[in-house]
Image 1 (tube, rainbow, N blue to C red):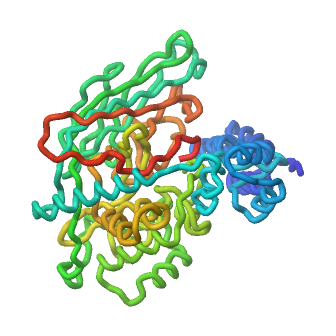
Image 2: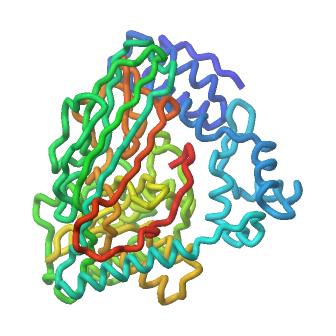
Length: 494
């Protein structure tokens, strides 16, 4: 149903509300037209026009995340699931097994619907025409955790087995994305300073690096500018090295100071912020999980274990299209690594445990990929890493391991971390420097890079990216199995 709107007589709030109603009813084209017209209306101030323009851009991004028609999805599933019939597929659609949206009268399914089907209904792995054998991967992951824990116990310290790692990251703005000669601005992630991630050195770049964010920046980037070539394209590349140690904290709850209260400098990591909202649902859940427990180590572990047992993994739509990532994850019972981390952060902050985002890249051999997890502050240790996704992985998906081994793998990632990560971010929803003038492609996280030209954002469909890495030989730490992380196929979802 089309709705006629006299834009000139509507308030900003009325327009945003109507656009949301049109979106919910599947009238994307109508909503986009409304927002595009309103964004050009000079009666709105600059901030309001910026928000109206992003609201329109958000709808375009949702279209990219939900491209599959019913026939597309069924055809793809028939190729990989033995014995699938139309009747069974229709039953799956009716029961909500696939994320979908009505867009301009047509039901569109999420791009990674097939991968998510296996994550949510792992029994279907028995019907794969080409089964996936991940046993070696699971065992290498466990071996890495065991090696780091053993080294930490021998050394009597949490940070061990340092590795010198060299990374090359490239990003190419696709041809015809901008007019030839246009200056393209680029921000690429680089390692932030941590006690276990040190000695960053920039070795090479495709053009002069004009700015590198401070070592303790919550969103550390290298900033470059290059003109587009005759094809309207440009390739940005940086090569750098850093040292990364394995981490394993022995978190004995008995040594936490009694009645400890976080100091004032930790207050930012206790408050609500974007995607960290203390809703009634979150409050009731937290109370149910921890009960009368008061020890912060035990509380945090209860939250971690609850997520491990109750939240499934799924690829997620682009974060910029979702209002509350924590609510999205909790209401559905599934989410990606960042959503699981934000759920854990929210539960911890609500219960007086300082918690913050941590993200960058997992350096798995052959398939390094973006990844999110978090840190919590516990006395007397300080900031410790926690990876809720790895808890979920160990509990739900590492089925080649014994129950004891799965618990061991899960427990390691409550206070433990592999060397093979590149950490660029220590908080979410932070601003780049120099400031980006257009809408961010990802306004929550920063791993794939950000690009703009002539004040216009270049979204993910306008560029490709890759990251390769190698270990620099010459350090004395023993070899660690490098099939240490689960692999994620690259999709348009996270």
